[in-house]
Image 1 (cartoon, each protein chain N blue to C red):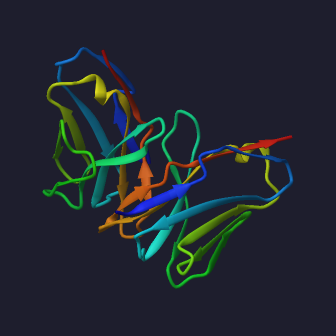
Image 2 (image 1 turned 60 degrees about the horizontal axis):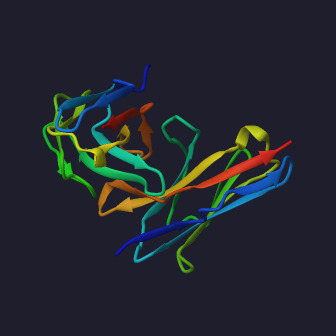
Image 3 (image 1 turned 180 degrees about the vertical axis):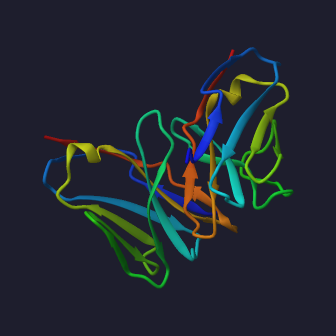
Length: 111
Length: 112
């Protein structure tokens, strides 16, 4: 049982480049989430998916898109990266018990 | 707007003492509150969930209280150990029942 996995672990992009952050969970959870964590700002919700086939905006969705590919996978795409998107990105999933299970994070630097 | 406040200053305590962390919130009437632990370079890990009709919840050396009148939760670690050193985050439901808003966390440092 791997829990929540994220790829890549580290990434450096130039401004304007695009990339997709991958997330997968093997716990059969319905809900999945993408957060970013910045010093002094805490964890902020970017997008979430309450169930397969649905996605909704969170607190800071601008500049991002998501895809809930199937029940296991929830990807986050940066179409045109900006330095303000330099952050640590966490994917999480949850079931009906409400607790969230987090992945190890992706450390993204945009230069 | 909804706001969660946790002490931004690190809490330094000696091994064996009880650590008490505070989470205050405003403009919320949460059905529950959660606490997470985060170690450097890692994702948060769930510790405890307490519901609005529960005053106190315990798990091993951890105790959480939830005062909906004061709009405050206290998180206690008894007989603290250096391995308890981490950042502790509180989280409340955000609008939709399954989404959470996190506080910025309080760092706990337990010295031997």
